[in-house]
Amino acid sequence: MGKRKKFSQEVFHQRFSQACKGKGLNQLELAELMGINQASISRFLGGYSTPRVPILFNIANGLGVSADWLLGLKDKKR
Image (cartoon, rainbow, N blue to C red; front, side, top):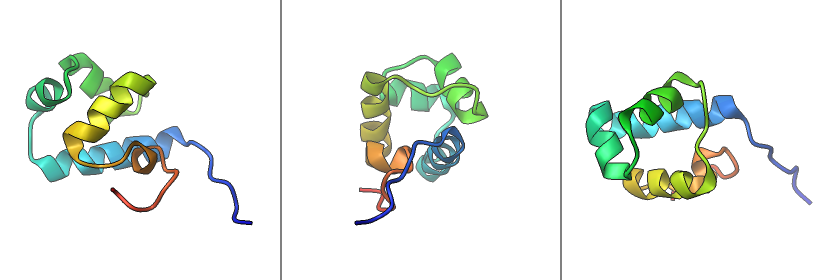
């Protein structure tokens, strides 16, 4: 049985930043794509907060990655 992975806010912050840079969009464009406000994007990118589950799924879909990958639970982006 494999070792169980745990959520890490640092991992979320790193992966969210990485996926956002890959899209090549500014914070306002990312917010519009994900259906959230720019202040939330700024807090997530700054590592000050993490999204609630419904927002997490919007983020994952908008960035074309899995929520599990963003949370550090899986190593594959999709």
